[in-house]
Image (cartoon, rainbow, N blue to C red; front, side, top):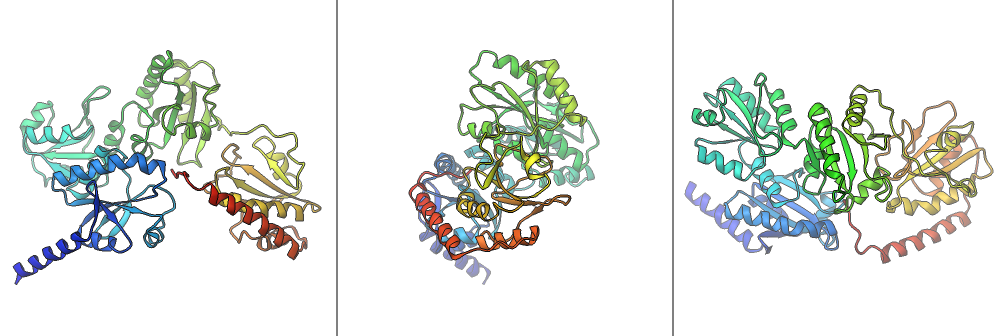
Length: 502
């Protein structure tokens, strides 16, 4: 009876598989077959992509290579790709908002993929997620096989895999995306002059292998592994981005450079000097604006590639994305060490970006705000309703004609209707996490984020209630706004091709 059930299950999977088309070992997922694919495979990585997306095109060969490697090793996981522009039900079901989006499925249950974009990173991540938390290695040859396919390996050697120290090590491995290996073979410990029980990071960068010196406890092992898993100084790239942002160190020092410049080696040495002292407190990164899409990051930090390089910034990913600027023109060991010390001790003043305020900033009903004039205008003696927008944001562009009309409607009232490019201007105590963000500033009161409708009626009703006025919306107002919105939609349709999401 049991053998019959197993046979039936195998035949069912084979029948399903017959309907699945593949492209370079990657299963082509559709609205009709994805549920069956996920039912047949315990583990699956699914890429939701758009054919015109540049990032998707860059990922494609690495994704296919990873699929081939997994197939060659008879791995239990499969790779799937779904064209989210045609498979609309799946895109809606999984709330796909950008491309590529990768989802990891275990028995049909989805979670976010947090690994890298190279084939090696994808395979290593999948092997970690679908295999044991720590890979058992019984021989030196088995360990060599693990280290050959992983840049970093956290190795623990114990008298028994069931003793308390080994269990603490395995617990750390469960919550980590690093590759952990565990052994009870003392010869392996002797190879690295490692006491038993003992833990060592195996790596071939910086000072090489590093032994763990503290008590073998889960949190301590996890922190040690994260701190030692990245080089002292790391170059930002598509391949390293997930390791940089996915790590536990959330304060990042970035050096914006041209790596082809003759002074780069000395600049990197200064970074390494500072990194040796502040390792674990700051992550030290350098970024070349001439490579890939790195120019976008230069823009985000307000660094001009032609005039400001080299430049230093610190960003705290946990404190409202607060940024700090290295002010000196001279970047050397002493200057960087002093800068880092001020940051970690909390004595460094936050840097707020600002565009120059246009001379005609108040010429139109909607006032143009910048970091420079924001306090004087938006937090003055009158109320202000401010649109925080981004130049590339489609929702912001759709709102633009409505916001302009809102400015006209309240032009004769003691209320400022303003807008500020939040990608180029920052305001103290205001954290912008999505676009558009609408905030109402009342004199003597806390700022209020507006969460209501974005049509003209809703916005006017809100401002009337806050300011105690009674401005009315006419049919002519609505017609004008609708006409301008239609013009924008037509423009967007003509210019959609080639738009990439990060």
